[in-house]
Length: 317
Image (tube, rainbow, N blue to C red; front, side, top):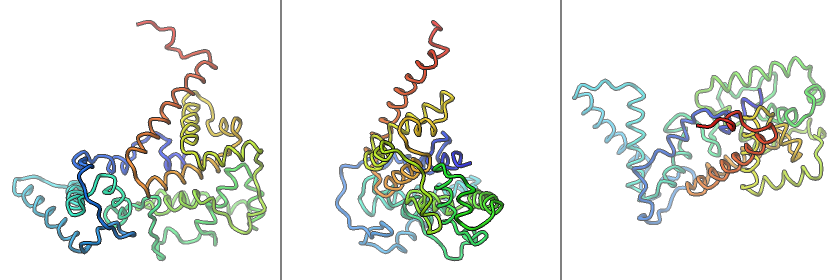
């Protein structure tokens, strides 16, 4: 369950990430070298030279005018069409009013994703105290549940975790059913995103602080390195993906060869994702993406050689 959940958080499951597509499909706003410095509100990332209400009204005016014209021409617009129209005009107005580049626009979209799209973005989580999806389960809140997941995915037996928490294993089974279920039901992705944020923070609770996963000296050094060296992290991420593609348990391979357990690796993955969202830089992202893909190819060749080569290697066309 953990690997599937982490895959959805970090994109390792190869599914289309709709948010990423929306964030990177901004070819109309690539005049990045002709903008002036603008002062932004640190929370909303709106320009401080205008009121947010005026911005929203301008977007609405342009969007509704377009929608009226479309309907007058006989177009039948559904809710998704209307959302896309607002999305495009929001980008247009933000770019015009702030004279900014596409990276700044994406940072703005991240900071306001809940307001404008109803979806949370890692690094910009906003929590409603009355959110029913965040109500504790058997007295265990999401932060504590995440701390338990960290210990278990680090290799500590769940029975030891339950004993330290002071409840029966059946409680863990219910926690591990209800919290993932809420993640699936929460269309704002608040639970999932907050879980990932806690994971990135490597959270713990007093009851679990004495439970330590074994880690070698080499493993500790490698863990510190992937936390501080983005290229090393991308290399191992590429290696892990290549391993899975060759029928090898990638998480176990990382543990066997670098001494880093699944919990720690995923914690670092969420750390880099959050930092990337908060400091969006398309050039850096492309560089790291290309580097990971290169390393994935290198490790794929290594795994293929270890397995006697690919089936297609002996096929001549």
